[in-house]
Length: 108
Image 1 (cartoon, rainbow, N blue to C red):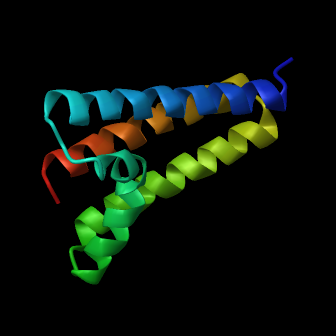
Image 2 (image 1 turned 135 degrees about the horizontal axis):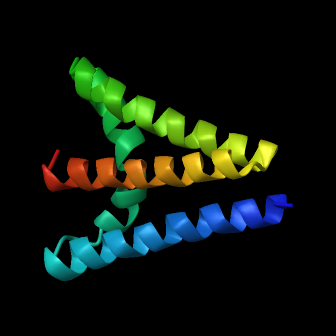
């Protein structure tokens, strides 16, 4: 039986490890500014709303859909505690972080 505690811990560990990887990449390899510490985990929703303000709807929709999908699947995994939803939430977190890497990488 998967408990809520295990689900929350596994999602938190996934998120934290990917955040650490992002910091290692951006601050270690590319010598980015310290602002990337806070921009790395918040890039998709931040740039999603920023793209909406600039009327760049395709990038805005992709960013906001990825954000909503990740939040929704993580909440669903916590609520349902099924293996398939947990795997889907972990995959959504990986996609979220890859999109964050793309947004920061292109320098938007």
